[in-house]
Image 1: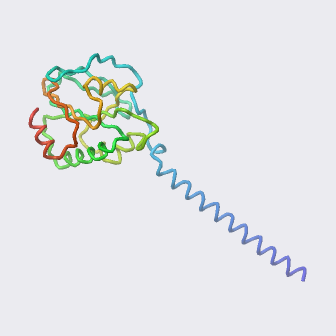
Image 2 (image 1 turned 120 degrees about the horizontal axis):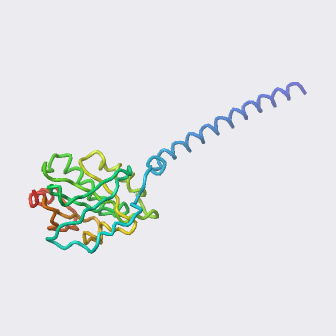
Image 3 (image 1 turned 45 degrees about the horizontal axis):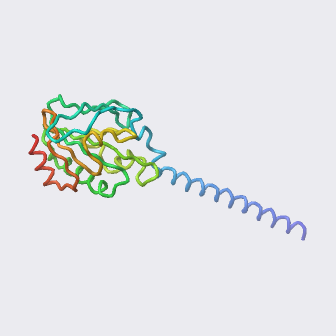
Amino acid sequence: MTVKTNKRQDRFGLWLTIGVVVGLALIAVVVMGEGGDDPNSEVDGPVVLEKTLDLGTAVAIGDQIAEIESIGFDEQAVSISPDDGRAKFVIFVAHWCPHCQSEVPRLVEWLRDGKKPDDLDVYMVSTFVDGTRQNFPPQAWLADEGVFDEDITVLLDTSKSEIADNFGLNTVPSLALVTADGALIQRESTLLSGKVLDELAARIT
C-alpha cells in the first residue's frame, strides 16, 4: 500500500511539474506577443524638435515663407527653403487628431496614384504632440499609414509648435500652399479629396 501510494504521488508530482512548465511557457509567449504590438517598443527617435527656432511673426498670405530648419524622426536634418525653386504642399498633422487620421490616408492614396506633379514637393509637419493622447508616438502612427513609403518629407515641429505658428496655423489638419518662389498663397483646413489636391497642386505648379 505504501509503495503504490508513493508511485501515485510521484506521478502526480511529475504531471504537476509539467503543467507548471507549460503554463509558464504560455505566459511568456503571450507577454512577448503583447510587447511586439507596442509601438513604443518598435519605434525609437525624438517626437519633437527640442530647440527654439525663433522664426518670428506668422507669415501673411502673399509673403515669402521663412527658412525652416528641423529634423525628421530619424534625427537627420530637414529643411523647407523658400529659395529652392520648388512648389510645396506643407501639411500639418497631429497624431491624436481624428480628422488627421482621415486626411493622411487620402494623401497617401493620392501619391500612390501618381497624381503629384514632378515639380511639387510634399512636406508633412508633425505638430501639437501630446504623449497622453492616442496614436503616440506619432512616427508609429505615420508608419502604419504608409507615410514613410511615399514621397513625403516628414519633419518635427518644436515643443512650442513654432513651425505651425509661423505658418499662421492653429488647427489640424492644415495645408499650406507655397509657390516655387517661396510665397505662401493659401491655407486650407478642411478634409481634402484627391480632386481637391489636384486642383491645389495645379495652382502652384
